[in-house]
Length: 308
Image (tube, rainbow, N blue to C red; front, top):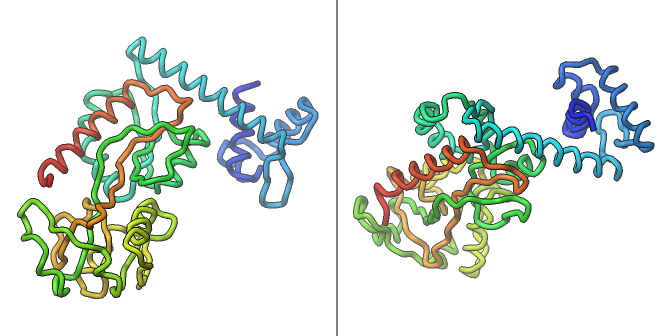
């Protein structure tokens, strides 16, 4: 297999369109199409079902793409190992970041990381847990930092950073709010979620990793919540609670320094993990290991300040 040709075919498979793929590759559409036709003639079978705007892989195409990704991964692993051996480590890596917290972490540790690994560059992207796992499986993302409760995939490796409680958040004027521990006391009081079965809730959107954890908490409490609305922004949820219009279950990260809300541990103590994630086929280079180590130190310091 020709490596350049492999990259061409993978880009067509990604974009599902020769026209868009040629723009991404900075070559003419006709030249890219000729490369595809040449390969299909060599293989004796088409790689794509052609549609005007949406090309899908044929069974032969699926086999080719699977092998092509493995070949490129072997090349990347080999280069990374050689660079580690020689101490050059000049390569770039792509990094997926959980919304909100991921960017904050990255901004905090990036200057120190560059001091330790000055010849390594990072291309960060803020993206959800499900999408990160999809991109890593497709070989289009090197490392992901994500929050996850369940749904780990067998062909990916996960490095545990820390666990995080999800807390019940009530408006400060809610009748149960007076039972909350005093702010700054270091611990939260415990609340049975069943006591909120008649309340309205704001929840994360259904396909989010946070929603999977909260849905399980409601199942264990024995009721379906009355959903006022769903959102994709966890950071905005406390403001709706503080306005007195609903209750919520929020990650502890978003509970810090909030005004106008009362916070509780739930009796069932729902939790999720902050993990790094990468392909089982990948070699974890020294710069990547350094970044993961620094991230772990960041979160231990962050939660150590108000650990309960």
